[in-house]
Structure formats: structure tokens, C-alpha cells
Length: 141
Image (tube, rainbow, N blue to C red; front, side, top):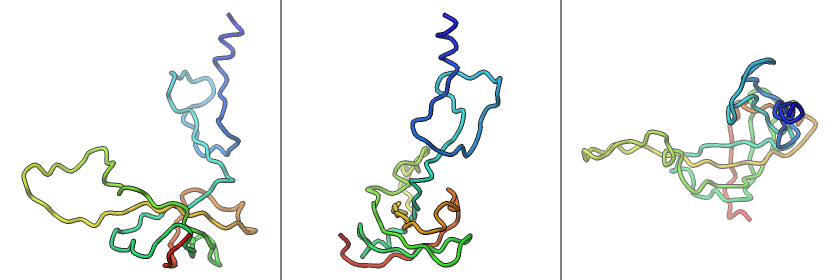
């Protein structure tokens, strides 16, 4: 029984990664399902650009992208790999109540996933950095 209890103290990550944040410290008690650490895969970094719906025309999977990261010069290059199927507001935790009939038009944003081309600065990239994107318009792939 002691071996079984000891096995319940092990934490296994689903992939090799980097610990970005610790939520608990050694000796803390944790219940199943409670987050212990937040990790990311440094080999799978990408940019998510929330593009206004009015700027979607001409954006397609495969389009080239200029990525201007505040922390780096010169710019990175990338490629659009996914265009979201819904706006971020569509999945809001507290959706807007429109039962009274009033309506205010708000420009929605669609998430665009962009792969980053690797270069010698790749290892210095970190999740959460500020990036401005310039997407080339074409028919894509």
C-alpha cells in the first residue's frame, strides 16, 4: 500500500517542456484535477493573432506573415496555418444578453494561428511576447 501511495505523489508531464509557472510548492497538499504547474513545449511555439472580421478578406492558410516582435530585430517570418471557425466572443464565459432588443455593433475578432520560421533566435522566444503581424494577401495553399 505504501508503494501505491508513493506512486500517487508522482507528477508526469504529457510532453517534455519548460515550467512557466508553479502553482504549489513542495509539501503542499493537492486534490486531483488541481493545477500544479503550467508548462509549454519550446519546440511548438506559434503566434495567435486576433484579426478583426473586417480585415479577413484575402487572408488564407499558407499566406506569408511578417512578425515584428518588440523584443527582437529584425522581424521573424511566418505562415498562416489555421483560421478560426468562430469569433472569440462566440465562446465567452458570460455571453452578452440581447433579450431587450437593443443592439450595438461590435467588430468581432477571429483567431489566426501563425507558425514561426526558425532561425538562430528561436531559443530566445518566449510565450506571451508582444508581436505585430503583417499578413500577405493571396489565395494561399
